[in-house]
Image 1 (cartoon, protein in one colour):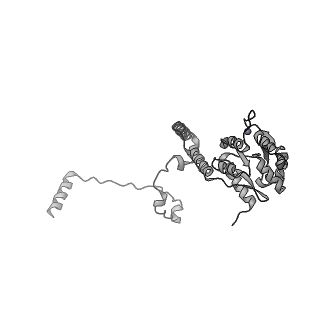
Image 2 (cartoon, rainbow, N blue to C red):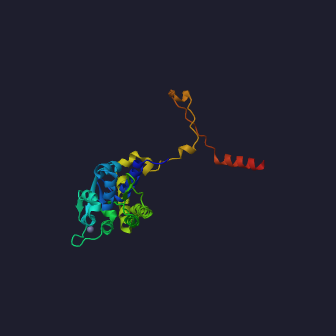
Image 3 (cartoon, rainbow, N blue to C red):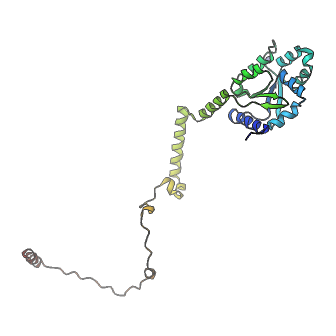
Length: 254
Ligand SMILES: [Zn+2]
């Protein structure tokens, strides 16, 4: 079954949230080409993107992007107005600006910790970002804003990250084993464990599952017996030695 646009977006953004710690408000770095597309498609980015991603967003750009868009002149005037509405994020090129694409590339080089989403129509920038782990790419497909599915390199990094969570160092393993043994001894020495013989102690006696079921006692057994007043005492008859020997002899002769 084909997933709807919003379901796909939810699935993709959840992937970044779970694996790389992306959270709301999502920070979206926008370039001039994306703003141009939004102007052409008459899409209000501030309204449409939060609805699409299902959460608050911060639309940001950089000084390099603004300067590049300004330099293009009247042809992209609408895009320039849109891009200037967004917050300007420090990019480190304040003294000497670079191209918008290179600026956004440098902003996302460590995106597993900075966690930006890049919104661009620039195909070469999209392709370059596709090879950088953990960079979600947003673009216009006709009238709709779309979030690209995570790239293979991003999925690979997510798997590695997940696995590394369970790979403990030698020191961590030692600390954990010490903690475990101290907790166990503490529990065994305390009185609490007596309620749980199955966990800390082995039940004494044979395994009840391997035994035959007990026979039901007769009703008579349950009736208390009346004790007799006088008990008969057994009298031991002592046989003298010479009689014993005589008997043995007789038995051997037989
Ligand atoms: Zn810059």
